[in-house]
Length: 418
Image (cartoon, rainbow, N blue to C red; front, side, top):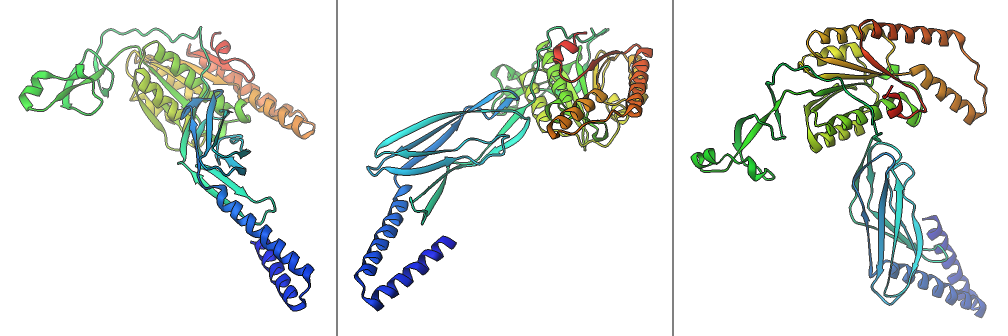
């Protein structure tokens, strides 16, 4: 706006000076200014005309570590070349999407591919394509947006667990649960009207003939050796920074264990201790895998309730023959006793603890290295953390609970195989 105001003032002064003095040189400057400004205006007006543009995203979801491919295409349908075009996508993705400035000849087309790394889990937004053009002198500019914005979901990274094994369940029989499932099981308990997407093999023909409209069977989940993952994301116990924090490692461990259990055809349920405790009923198959990944992509470490309260709230959802997997960075041994009570109900327990003092030390060392400051060791705090860690391990050993300790900087599959 300031540039246009200055241009207007200069033009008015030049016109007034030329007509008041009748100097040929001033008229020459006036004609030159009209030619330059008028040509720049026309150039900008034609800069986005007869231009087709678009972009295509290879995937709307992926895991941390994947690369998302974005293909851009620009086509000039007129004979007038486009001398300068600036193209970019505003986005909330970490690192963004690189833009590009190009020149497009008459009746020509250009395409290019961008591989954007997915470095952080979460829900992100890619805004419509933004195209901008202008004149060489910077007098005028024009812009336009193309397409619609899209949402991209980045799931946690899944690490292979080749030697991870859940305890074998000791079931004396198989009973139905009141939880409806989308999986086909031997227990068809009720029927309902047909909905788009239902498989043909679920149609109950006798009921369909009796009601005069298509009815499909509903199934109950058969009690088997299921797994229930309890993820503790209480705010006050988390340490570390970035991808090596206890929050990200715990979420990564929950995603990897759930993926492994689903591959073994187990039904997997989940409890996440966040601001409002989230419960995901147990189920099998790819649909449950997607639900778990979407839940883990969105959660943050904002829980206020301690782990012991989360365990008490989850006890009623655990059935005999299940395996409870607890993932936590808490050093408070108070939550061990409720796990011991589960064994009397036929629920096996596996504990995955995160070495919070080790994560805190790695974060402090990394911060000191980046800032150039020296870190003085706090012997009293280190000794207190070591005592709490030994007390927790003693409590787990006292109740004969299988436990694994996860430290920073090591492969998850290696630490869960010990």
